[in-house]
Image 1: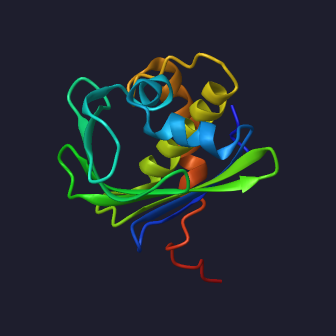
Image 2: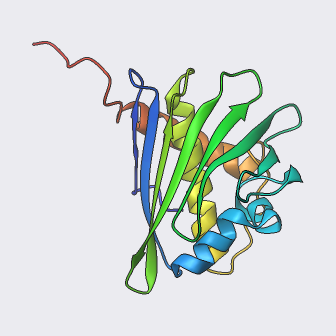
Length: 174
């Protein structure tokens, strides 16, 4: 696990931002982000649909919750933006950008307009990006959305660290 590569959260703005250097070329990372079978390998099973221009797909995050994603920007293999409509929450926005970085890829993830606590999202995206890195290296992470035992253990260890990155928190007073 790559827990030393923390992103940041901003509760006041409702944003999560992460950057990750991945050991695969942009085209391979793009395929892992957009192929429904591969999304199920590192993020969550695709219940219906597929990413694509003006596409819509549904991720099964756990037994009771899904994330319905509607593609609003499609620029292969560099950028994708989706409306993220998670069960029981107002819709938010997820932007993924891929930048060639030598033989690898710099992935920038920005999840915005989150109307619930962003700390769980920061820790969750961190674990999912760790899973993506393992998947791209040929490993099997057995992604189960947000409900697997390994996911939950990693998430629980990261959540307090993400709470400490809150850029929207008031400054401590002397």
